Structures are given as C-alpha cells and as structure tokens.
Image (cartoon, rainbow, N blue to C red; front, side, top):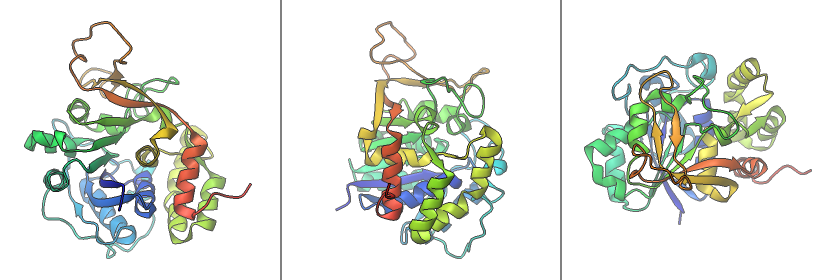
Length: 324
C-alpha cells in the first residue's frame, strides 16, 4: 500500500517534469492527479505538458486544468529563456501521448479528491499557489482534511538568498503573492522547501550524464529535457549543472530527515518593492508580531543533506547509486 497519496500541482516546466518522473517511479508515492497552473508557461502549455508527462510516465493518472492567471494580477510572461518555448526545454515530444483531461477545474478536482480521501492527501505544489487558494475559497473546510501541503517556493535568507526573480522574491511565490499568503496561513500542515535548500542542491553535468547512462528511458528523458535548462544555468550563474528546485519538494515528502526545518508562521508581502518576499516569525522569537501571531506555524526548510537528496533521486531513477 502506498505511503503517500499525492496531488501534484504543477506548471511544467523542466524541473517540474524531472520531479514528476521522480514521483512516478518511487514506490511510496501514489499519484492521484496532476493539476496545472500558469507559471513557467501559459496555462494551455502547462496543461499540455502535464498531460504528456502523465501519459508517458504515470498512465491512468488524470490531469485537471487550473488557473490561467493570479487571483488579482496579470499572469507573468512565460519563462522561455529558462524552460524553452514549449516549457519542456524545446524537447520534441508526441502530444498524442496524453493523459485524460478531467472535466473539473483544478480547484474542484483538489476539493473532491481530498474529500474522497480525508486525512490522506498531500498537496505537492511547485508552481504559483493559485489553485490551492481557489480550493480554500470554495471549500474552506478542506484545510482540516488535507494531510499536508508541501510547497516549493520562497526564500528566507539563510545563506543570503532571498529571491531569484527579484532581490526579494522567488518565482513561484511572486507568481501569485496574494494566493501564497492565503495558502501559507491556512489551517493545514505546511512545509516550505525554498531556495535556501534548493540552490545548494545541484545536479552536476556528470550526475545528469550518469542518470542518462544508467536510468533507462527515464534517465534519457531527464537528460534530454534538461539540456536547455542546463545551458541557462551555465549562462546565468556560471553553474556546470542545475539547481534542484521541484524535486527537492518530492525528496522532503519522501525523506524529511534529510532536511533541517524551522517552525513559525510565514507571511508573504503583497505590495511594495519587495512584493513576493516570504518572512517567517520563528517560534523562538518572543516579541509580539500581530501580522504573524495567530497564524499556523509552517515548517521552513533551512538545511539539507545534499548528498542524501541526490542519492535518493538517483536510486529512484537508476535503482542504485553509482559505485565509487
């Protein structure tokens, strides 16, 4: 019996695709559905990509189309220079290999699925949090029925990193800061896997080549889909490899012991030059902070066992780590 029933809320996206393969191949994850959202590309593109990914790697798992724009703002421009014109690193793929599209909008799919499995569903969200906020607005009581929400997003300055789109904001949170503030304040258990632990986690060129050589069709796909993405990292950060963003959220779900966390409520700035910034009041901070106090605590990842995370991904794709 699977340990984790997951709804994967995603805006594919190269790293989203790599995280989907991770989930599809891990025996402790049962994917109940994918819900698409705008972000790395338009909603039409992310939905098409989600359907392709589910059709190829998670047969029988449905896809529900989600929000095309933030709650109160204009949708951001697609990130073609990062994820390619088609969202999947300009990789050619057969769009006919597609999972079925559920008739319900994503937020209703989330509500209905959570209510069908009370206390069992993890919401694994790696894009803007609009679908989750819409689900809460439509049915606030689902917060008490969700097992946990694991969010890839935000940054808390643990090693000086506060953003990757602006000096203050990470891309997923900036995509819909209003939704993020709602979701991070809801009465469900929340874990935040942000840049503090995803940027120190790097898949090197050699690591990715090993996945290609040893991981069969999945490893070859990971290599192929990441070529444009790796080139972006080399050009923008002089990095010979890629940051591991979305797959880190999967790793936290599977092996939380690989991460050090700090507890406390989190707010998201929704206006001003630092819009999208995530700020936690640590539980150890005794001073009153009315804008934080009274909100549920979130578990924020502040440290990571990088070698352990990479070994977990490698075992899942290849069956065993490389010999040394």
